[in-house]
Length: 292
Image 1 (cartoon, rainbow, N blue to C red):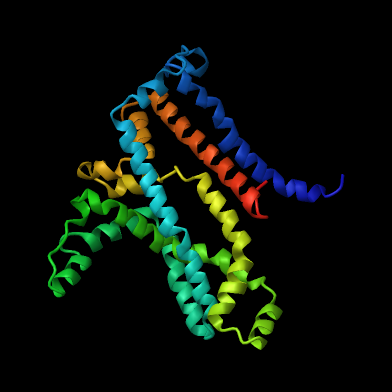
Image 2 (cartoon, helix red, strand yellow; image 1 turned 180 degrees about the horizontal axis):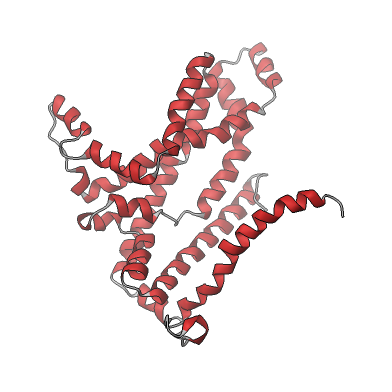
């Protein structure tokens, strides 16, 4: 058998996805059942789309859907371009020592746990925190960042950008390293400035990478992380902070309504799947880059 060692190396990856991604799909059927722990999945009675209908008619449906869409939209608009901008700026730096220092400083937050990041955010934006102290220094009134629903999206998206911007720039810097240096030399001969080189050479050179990562981001557009939100929000912020993932957590783990929470989670997964298919179709139609 040819390349048997390569297939052998692939086995742990296949086993991982088979065990943790595909095997759990068997349990998705409880979304269509009135699941009972005593009876088990196979013996629990079927109820069809009852849990989906209950969710769609719930008071919380539009709130959690809106909040999920808004947080995901803000992350896509502000969070996705941030590593690209940082990579473009670092690519223009010619002093290697300064470039390495900036890279190291921006990479470090990626290795900080979500719990620590949320703790730092709460300390900085508390009523007596650093941010409010700076506001007082310039003559502004302190803000109740942690008790104001209008500030939650800013805190969530901003802390996410701070934590991931450096790590996310790595793949774009790698893509820039693959651009033919002869293109830059030819452009300098033609009198192109550094800015024009970035616009006409660097950005088109990394465009396929940007498109692929954009499609992948669209694929989990609705998957707003519940762990960070649960650590960051409070009941007074539910108006803007309650999302599908936190709703599933409350219904499934806190209220032990497993079938209902499974239905809500399945609805969210189907939306992500449809968005991924749509994004790939549009990319395949209007560009030469696609996932499949």
